[in-house]
Image (cartoon, rainbow over all chains, first blue to last red; front, side):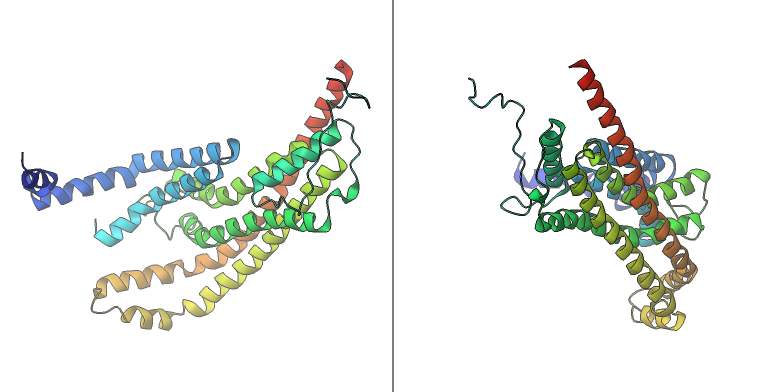
Length: 85
Length: 241
């Protein structure tokens, strides 16, 4: 396999259409940032933020997980607005 | 190895604050308080001036800095959380608010301030000796001052946004700058969202007062409970010895 072939292989548009590629990302974002899984991931991140930040006193990890929880909770709305999902 | 002047196995040399070792983070303050606590627990009577004025200020600075930063983050995020409770701001990509969504928004709104105050409260188990008590009091003084400042900043910030910055004409004029790069429909959506969210700012100001009150009182409750527990443990240790 030449380097050019390898680079082509890395480009997802060589084996799927633009529409397919966009719908894949849309489905992924909808699954992760909306509905049940978003609630599950956001709650889990908030729980972990308290567990690591307060109980284990790893403050930086706690703060980062808190922001991750906020990003999951509000990310769906932001993406919906920006990408018109 | 024996000492001529008696057994020194229990002797702990407490560190002075403010000199060469300047506490920068909460963990540094904990280790200083721990040092005082261990020395006082073993019956060493520490001189009161070991905690100098500079040391007190440095410790309260640590409490102030953390609480102030967490306060600023709370001020920026609170309107988004209160907006969910008031059904103006969507969460999890939907305007259909369930009880879970609103409970989660309340949890998010409270968690940053609560998290920080619970971290501070963990120092409560050392609230026993004269010097350790004094150091913790100064740490909490820093937290309280930051809390009061947070309330003032929140009120000024939210009311300025409500009364001046988010004035209907001003917002419309500002949004029209982005036309035609951004479509009129999108700009209209942003305008309607901002106008709908505006009253949330006033609720947020009151909400910040509530969270600050909790942020100040919760550590004290934990400190008193934890210190009583430690005292009981020390008394039990003395009986068994």
